View 1 (tube, rainbow over the protein chains, first blue to last red):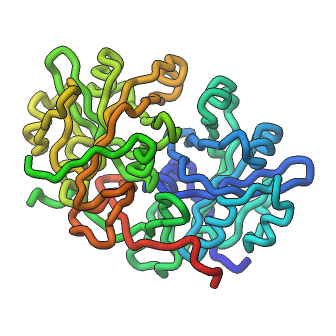
View 2 (cartoon, helix red, strand yellow; view 1 turned 180 degrees about the vertical axis):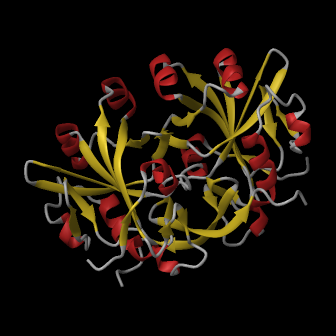
Length: 194
Length: 194
């Protein structure tokens, strides 16, 4: 782990997800860590920041989160496309060595008993807001973001810098079957109408 | 309106949103049409396809949808960045001529009493699944997609073709304050680990 990481003020945390990246969801419970990929994760509120994430009943990560009430949402990069697809394609239930085989390196954040995935561009520590009806009916989980961080090479001062950062740090946007698009060029919506 | 539009089979409809684009939400009720922008829209299920969208209580579009129980989610393009920012920055409540001033052109789809925004790359007609607790507590709305279509220049045979289509047809991914990123290059997650 040799990344320049800085805290992101909570009122700016929604910006880490606002462009709709595919994320990694990680959880810890009873000595077990796991990481899965999720394309269906979305900001839900600004302050306090909240988010939604869809967690299928078959996933081990969901079980960990239901028990611990905590999880991390992190934004993987183009450099992590293979790993992201791997952790999204295999379950810890069938592949106990999943994390090692997928090349996942975990690290700790002081004060958080949660597994953070190294090499990502952003991390959001979340507390589950229990909503049993949503969880059972829709596999829909709501989290309140309690802390956030980003790799300062690509997100600083409340802004993404995809234009100037290493393209390997761009976010991934999954379509299907391991086929992603990276985030692309900046586009202004405030320039005069053409 | 002179776009090549084809129906998207419902089991593939989630792919229209899977990469996390900013969307336009439109609704119709009692002779009033409205369109707003929403960055917080996300797929929720494959089959039948469902989605979530966050609609602030201040928006007129939310009121239309609460009354009619129907709405359209559509994917705007780079060519529509200014319009997308405009309809996301003004309310019909304060600006009765909002749609005309924003350059929104609406069109009809046979069999649907809903306003569709011309020039987008994809459209999903939705039926509201009433969840009063989510709507009141989180501004979170759930829709079931009942039909979907795409501009065949950029989405056909169940796949986006951003690599080869006109860059003006790429999706928009809002960060904040009218600053978007376009979707970028294709990235494979199944290529051998490097």
